Image (cartoon, rainbow, N blue to C red):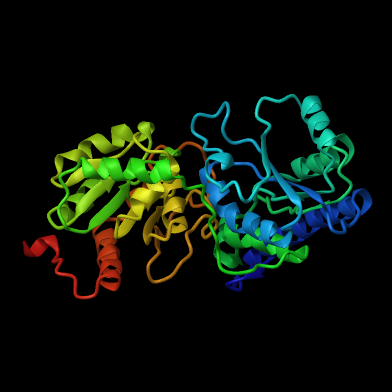
Length: 397
């Protein structure tokens, strides 16, 4: 792990040295366990890929799984995941990824461990690739290594990586260059001989029925020829939600000149209702699947989104996104690919940054991102996307 800024204070240097030592020690345990438990696979014929999480986790893993498929074109590749059944807020990998990537997807949610072990053993895998979650504790990683080797009977495996060390989080955020999740998984593959054949690829499972659904909904709206901006006002975690009043200010600014599409799930309807008072504003919340939402975004010039699943869909579908991030997590980890068209706004100088909390009494880090700053950034992106655009700021109307 590299440092992007060298600590100046001796106390900070000692803290970062301790973090790096503990991470190295944890990965030393992982490497020793791997050496003792697993052997190298030569030309595996049947591969199990293990990746958990919801829509954002799955989209961030898509470039990696695409590379695995390209590296082993003749092998059968199965996915073991847990998103979906039993979790109403999760979206399964199966609902997102092209069937050309995996020959079979096993959702282990609700399956007893002994039954799952028997199922995997019967499949007879040659290799397990563990696409580790960043926050996985050491004991979970060691548990998985033992489970796949002795209970599932898989003799070859790799991918385990220890990252989780929660002491001195603010110092870590300040001094250590943490990779985003897409790059982190790609690097795990590269260290194990899986080449990166090209830029990020997102093999979504787009069906004709999805395109037809979006086309029908658009045809039912009284849309003009004006360009469209998509806005994602909701998020699974309340800490990731920008205030609805701030979204109102942005929509008030743009709705005279743009169609405004509000995107999200049924759970986002409370955040959406106050925004529908503005002209040229339409809600698609609860009407579309995630992939249909991605297709809808492709009809938009730009997406403004909280840190949530549709934000990942935006860049995955090639649509520029202005992403609003809380300070709950480490910076960069879940950011979109940063370029002139994808921009991240995250407040600076937040005393409680990197809290990793599931509750927040004030949400000060999101409130500190002002509507004026967001409009300024969106204006800059719009001017890059549509040079000579006739749009004038609302202050001139």
